[in-house]
Image (cartoon, rainbow, N blue to C red):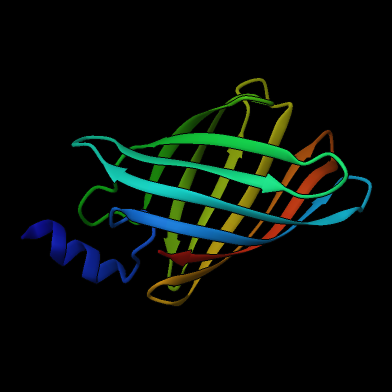
Length: 153
């Protein structure tokens, strides 16, 4: 019962409830080329670990599929932040944090060597839809950015 109370208090379904979310939107590379993207992510709660496992398919002349698996430390009762880690096939390991700020979930991340870093936010527009914006950088340059809508399936 405590966990359900906690979910209601936070007001967010993404991350806090198991489920599948469809992604659609736009991906922009460091040269400014913008293409459509689609994808899917699934949230699973496995005891003391939450898993966010998903992919993005970036359209264009040479379509690319990016897979990522986040391992998230569950939010502790009364806390609005937690940490996560992932193994990105292109970038290697990444570590980051999530912070809940009102209607949004903010995330900052970096590679352990500091070469790659970025930020993203998820703003709840209704209980089953989030606007997601993010940027990946290196040495003060944008590698990529994205503008996505996540919809619970």
